[in-house]
Structure formats: C-alpha cells, structure tokens
Amino acid sequence: MFKELPVLTSGEAVDFTKYEAKFKALADAKRLQIMYELTQKGNVCVCDLQEIVEMPQSKLSYHLKILLEAGLIARETRGTWSYYELNHEEVNRLLSPELCCIFRHDAPSDCCS
Image (cartoon, rainbow, N blue to C red; front, side):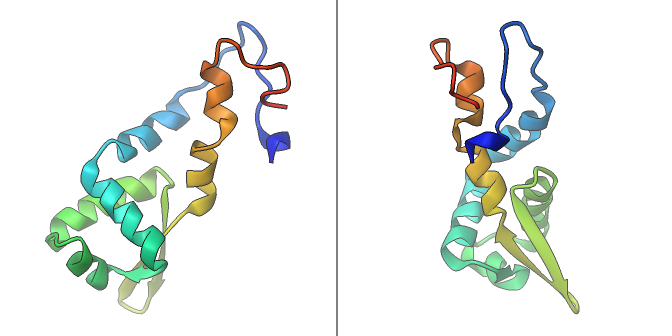
C-alpha cells in the first residue's frame, strides 16, 4: 500500500487542488450521512436512499452530484434507476497516511515510501 504514496522532498510543490473537492464534499453533515448509509447498506437504489436519508429527491441529487464529482461514491445505472455505492478505495486513500506525510513536520523518512 505504501509503495503507491508519493515521496515528498523538502520544498517540493504539492498539488492540493485534487484534495480540495474531496474535503469540501466531506464538509457537510448530509453528505457524511449519505456516505455512512452507503457504507452500512452497500449498493443502494436512489429511490431507497431518498427514504433512508429522508431528503427530497432534488436535494439528494445535489449532494450525490458533489460526492460523485469528488470521486467518493460511484453510480451504476440499471434501466431507469441509479444505484450508488461508496468508493471504498478513494475513501481509504483519503484516510491513509498519504496526507499525513504532507502535513507532518516530524514525518519519518520512510513515511511515504
């Protein structure tokens, strides 16, 4: 797992734009609730998700769009219905040592290698 992490050298520029949308998406209680429900229930039809989170379809669509654009969830269309699931790989990557290595002042030399 650690082989995929970037090795940062002192003074190296870090592109934070790829993280910006992800953390903006995470900075909302409703979107966190949606992600939690997807974690608990797995692949969920949008019609069922609407009932689970008790949200009108228009507001749910808005939040799902933000989560999709951030890569935190995935959508599969079956006929006329969309099914959503958590993008576990991306969520795990965000919660991994990758960002820790960028922000730790005392990061060990093998932190991101």
